Amino acid sequence: MATETTTTFDSNEIFVVFVLGGPGSGKGTQCAYIKRDYDFVHLSAGDLLREEQHRPGSEYGELINNYIREGEIVPMEVTILLLEKAMKESRDTENKTRFLIDGFPRKMDQAIKFESTVVESQFTLYFEASEETLRKRLLKRGESSGRIDDNSESIKKRFKTFEETSYPVIEDFMARGKVRKIDAEQSIEEVFEEVKKIFETAF
Ligand code: UDP
Ligand code: MG
Image (cartoon, rainbow, N blue to C red; front, side, top):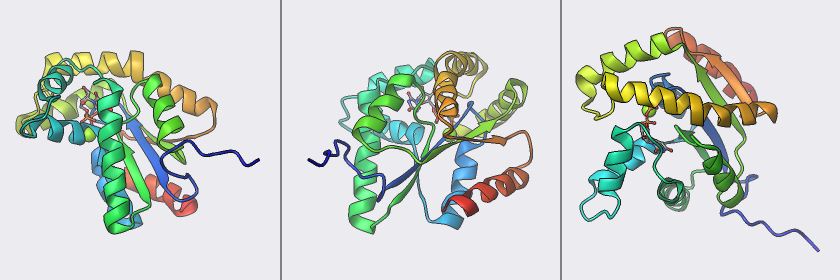
């Protein structure tokens, strides 16, 4: 008897690359370049949450606002629902099959739940940079981003969450040989050169 697939998507048809790294490591910037050159849909978990937070009538608005400001992780049911909905929409309306999932999974339970119910990932891109670099970038971004979490108080909490909760997810993927690590201390163009090497051989 053939084993039944229990995930929403088949990983032979739908390709997911997780894009991880500390806050301010350049995930969103690099995803925009990858999307431009390699026909990927870019889904930022943080952006989807912020969109839901501001959607009139959303039952999660207040909850999302509180978690984001505190640099904590929104309960995974909400995030996974938003990601899955966005993926279905892109597939059904535009026949898209390749997805960059930026800033997710940030906690071990999210990784397990997503890969066992939505789809297994191909690999994880990990942008590595020092806290000193990240703090500088975030404070600079905070001058114009309007984000409620780009201030030194929230930044401190986000680093703590990354170190204690999100980095273990990357370590777990590393142990399974599924991480492509990139030095994110360099300029945007230099980092993208490294990213290209990975995507040219993978896709
Ligand atoms: N967030 C979350 N779950 C996710 C992704 C983001 O709860 O899967 C929340 C979390 O509070 C995080 C914030 O959204 O600190 C901002 O995430 P984003 O990815 O936008 O920030 P970045 O890391 O790119 O600076
Ligand atoms: Mg981002």
